[in-house]
Length: 215
Image (cartoon, rainbow, N blue to C red; front, side, top):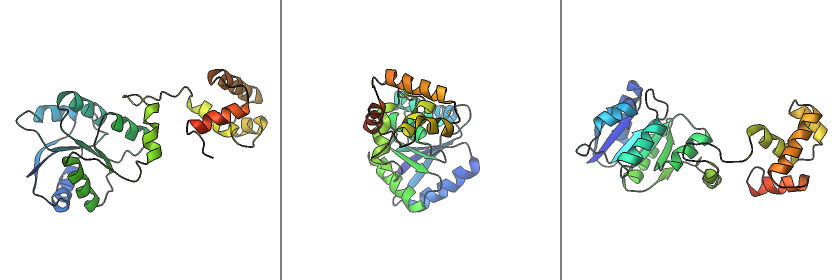
């Protein structure tokens, strides 16, 4: 018997996913508990009530998925977590991967894939969809455990750097970024200093090396 804990704030979705789990899994399944937030999870789980897998949403009231997974990691580190959510932004996936989750699925997943994911995760394995590509995993080093970007560049600087790696002139880049040429010149000088490069070629080499642009 596979014991599963389900943590999602939408009651109707929980009921629907329970039916899918029972249909998709190849072994008998028992829903050990249902929780609507991380706080409810804390009340329901115990050493005598330990699920084999916890299926977790991210966007929940009171205590969201990130905080819930972090609490599980500190309190019950042996329980594998499979994230099932509509949140597909790269930074969310990276943050969850850093927290040690075993799988990440979208809520529009096919029942068969859900069953495969539960089987893999419950067997101390991992399950990620094609979205979790090698390139995405390689960017993990750019984020800390709270999902903060450790890159020295902010969003606008990164945008400028990508454009600087093209054949556009600085004047054309200023128009594309809706900035004055003087402001763009400020970006250029700031990046030269920040990245310890001396020219546009140096900017391009940095961008390629760090995966900001591809050849």
